[in-house]
Amino acid sequence: MTELIQPLSDVGPVRHVPAQSRASAHPSGFSELVYSHYDWWRSREAGKADPAAAAAYDSARAAFQARHGEIIRAYWCSHVESAVALTERKRLGGLRPPSFGFHRETDWATKNAPEVATELHRCDELAVRAEAVLTGVRQRICLELVVSCASHLLSLVDRRAGTEDEARAAAALDRERAAIDKVQSYYCDAANGQAQLVYFGGIATVFLVIAGIAAAWLTISWAGPVAALVAGAAGAVVSVMQRINSGKFELEYDVGGPYAFFLGGLRPLIGGAFAMAITFAFDGGLLHIPVAAGAGTHDRRLALLVLAFLAGFSERWAQDTLTSIVPSAAKPPPPEADLQKGAVHE
Image 1 (cartoon, rainbow, N blue to C red):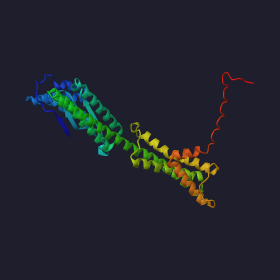
Image 2 (image 1 turned 60 degrees about the vertical axis):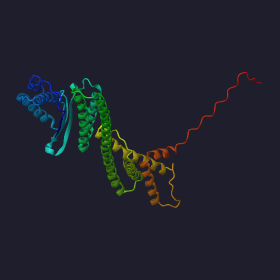
Image 3 (image 1 turned 180 degrees about the vertical axis):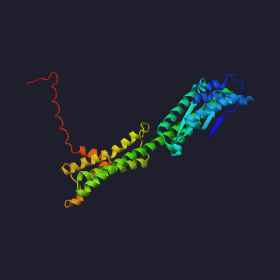
Image 4 (image 1 turned 90 degrees about the vertical axis):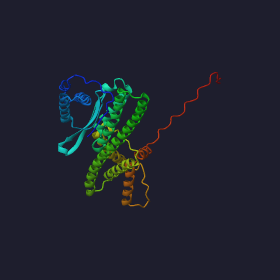
């Protein structure tokens, strides 16, 4: 557990507001935890032990952690009632991956620092997206980085409350903007990689179903369209694998895993459909198989499988091939030239 508290440089008098009264309204909320921590910290640094403040803080922290999980990282301001925290909640006794939560209470700190508030809102957005989209170690890394940026931003306004050089604060804010940009880039890469896994899972599932049905069919009798369906689906799988390996395969990762799985499942079906259309075009005589004149049935089947694979691998090639057999529309004759004005007719 990591907790950071900005050292007090100018401790004012401790407020005589009972800490327990503020923690009793919403004992499990982060705001009440921040208020009770602030009261406890101020009394502690002032050298005046306040058992009521300590008890209120312990009670608020226990209630908060019982609801949201253990606080594994936090930053508590010392001059204002503001803080950020990251919680970890175990699930099923550790059998399932833990869930993480980002918590922020910074209104008091940022009411006079709108530029810092804007960057903290960016942290909120990244945290929400990371909690909803990412899983496992990617989620934890991203949220740890978000909390780190939010802590640094909060320290700027905390120092400003205790007198800080404005020029140095502005330079530090620029550095934090750059750090948040890096966190956002990490989130995009991590979310896209995770979406690729789900997308490929949909591709593999549908391909295995197609391959199983086709294998059962082809063991009974040969069917060109069925064989082309499998070859086209295989071509689609290889095409996606090549694009993923090249690092140029981008997906919409904020739509959720089920939708990415659904889109992945469509890819082998599309490749197989193009492959079957190409096969029908060759069987119907619309296109001619580029094989030797004396080639046997076995050679023609292999050639059709190769063409079906290419149709699934490259949808553009399949579309161009199919559209090439459509006769071009006859061009209408050019309109007759209008008689020039003032022309003399005999």
